[in-house]
Every structure is written in C-alpha cells, then in structure tokens.
Length: 164
Image (cartoon, rainbow, N blue to C red; front, side, top):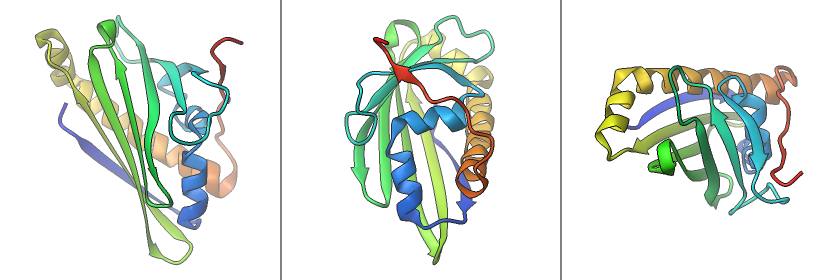
C-alpha cells in the first residue's frame, strides 16, 4: 500500500507527546476501535524493542493477527514502528510518528503508515478499499490520542503481557 499521512495538533509540548507514544502499551488506548486483543511481547513496554501483538478488525479480514515493534526512537522528534501482518505474517508494515512543535506548547503529530505486500491476493485486498479504511481509522486514532492527552477522555484498555 502506498504510504499515507494523517496529522493532528495536540496542545502539549512535544516531549510529553513523545513520552506517551514511546510506550507501546499506550497505543492500545487510542487504537482499540480497530486494533483489538492487544498483548505485549515483553514486560517492558517502553522504548526500542518494545512490541505488541493485536488483531485488526477490518472487514472481510481472514488473517487478522499482526504485530508491531518500536524499532527506532529519536527523542523527541520521531518514532518508527515495524511489524508484520496478514497470512503467514507476510505483509510488512511501517508506522512513523513525527512530532514537530510549530508553536511553543503545541505539538503537530504526523503519522505515516505503509505496507509492503508482494502476493497478488494481498495487493488486491489493499487496493479494494484497504488503504481508505486504514486511513480513516488512523485519522480517528489521532483524534482519540488528542482527546486522551488534552482532556484525559476516550481512554481504552491497556494491554497485558502475552504470557499472562
């Protein structure tokens, strides 16, 4: 899938936004409307190497499980998460959060998401509404992120460690 970017302004300094996003357990709180059944892959959910496995609630999705790991953190500017999903985990996924501060105390969060599908059936599924669906859900997730950080509302449930 070609990359797409969605953005939101949050009335907090970028350091605070970065600290929240650098803990992958927090991602379940603002994405649980389409990413469910979160399980952490290790006890420490903060920083590089922290990961989670979850189920994607997409229409007609037969192979719903996916995982993401925080692969790169450049405080307080950028977080890159890499993962896999789909049948046999053959679809590579990359999500990037870039945080800029256009004005003091205001953070602009840009989220870019892309997948790398090589099998024809995966490519067809992505082109048959998958990209538009993912973009809508990501846009809503960033609005929920803003509500959580600014107003402490619309919080979802934090995940548990996989073995527990």
